[in-house]
Amino acid sequence: TPIPTPTPLPTNTPLPVPTRAPRLNLPQLPPSFAVVPGEGITVLLVGVDQRPSEYAAPRADALMLVRINPQWQRVALLSLPRDLWVEIPGGYGYDRINTAYTYGEATGIRGGGLALTRATVSNVLGVPIDYVAMVDFYGFISLVDTVGGIVVNVPDAIYDAAYPTMDYGYMTISFAPGVQWMDGNTALIYSRTRNADSDFSRIRRQQDVLMALGVRLQERGDLLNLLTLDQTSAALLPYVRTDMPRDTLVNLFWSLRGISRGQIEQYSVTLEDVQMGRGDDRYALLPDYVALRSVTAQWLGYR
Image (cartoon, rainbow, N blue to C red; front, top):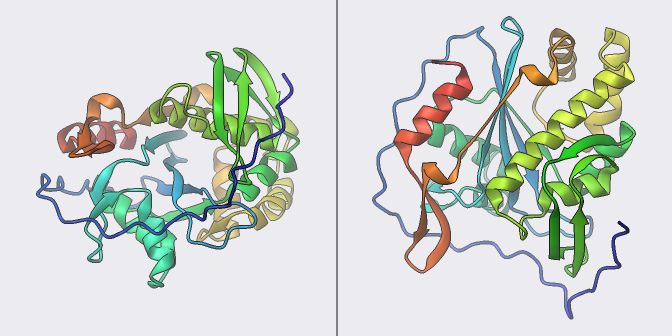
């Protein structure tokens, strides 16, 4: 189905920097998990809602942790909803978890938004994070297009009459159920839309898109030898901001070259793990830290 031309809003409205939230008396964080060195590594993936012509500090539109254990041939994904109401370390008080990136960029702290987002997520889950990687809208589109597009199985029909566009307008988008090929722009739309269902459904789609990208790399033969892996990483890394050394990335992919999509475990914080609403803010999600500890333990591989 062709995508209609977007209808722009009357004026362009830059994303505001959120005001500092008051400190709340939420439950204490659970004790940190004892992650044994050598068991694997944890990477935090951050997708920010920054448009190509935008210079204001963006927010984190997607937060996903990837736990990789080459020895066990295990990869596990854990997604966090962006409206999770948590403490932002460093004296910023409590706010949505996706604002940590904005605070870090806007206030000029060391390491910027990635450092503050990393610290926030690590504190919430009680788990150390080894590396962090960030991609914006343009970078995401370029990543998918660089590998020639991806194939995604859309489980349910999607119709969104108010999908936000790059120029701050809105457009109507739709996806029919079934297996379909997506270029970078289509994959971005599929990953971002949430008006038809919820953010909980959206984070599942984001995981599916990430796995489809991995499958595409396997199909292209990018994981067959270290030379092609090195060439592929060189082509993809310009679109990603990360503190992971390139040789580490290449070695990780190489160690997982035989893993199949069915071996990748998917976890997320669900509606059952949170309390909806905080005062007049009915969209804020207050975490149940007992439930959060449980899903984190499963994601880490503790049974």
